[in-house]
Length: 137
Image (cartoon, rainbow, N blue to C red; front, side, top):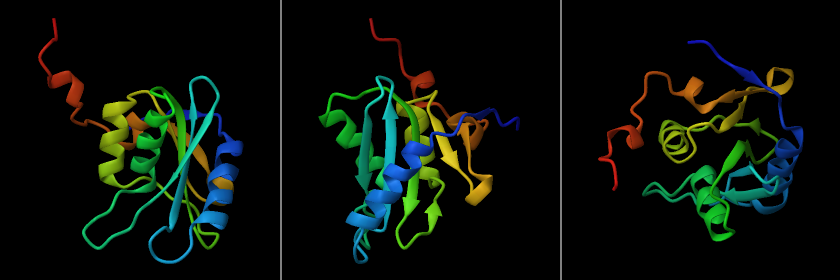
């Protein structure tokens, strides 16, 4: 795997960290996510934990983005509450991000090792849903 490093959007990390500090309280909301739309806007979301498998912050963010008319994301990051820092997306979120935004950059890593990589680098040799759909004519 060849990881393609991209510039890190520190404003996004701070937006997610601020959301985690101010809105993630208790066990139901423990991760905040922030993404930069192609037009520069920042969209945010928090997870909705439930023992049945509630949605991750990244998935909530995708829905929130759609409600705001944002369908193109450039970069996304998730940050844990209680100052846990950047949290990488789970496997399900990696697949959804790849399917919805195949060129999105994802911020991962810890402390000084934080970096921004393409979603395809986090999910190499992956199944791309769009590649297996019949052409709509």
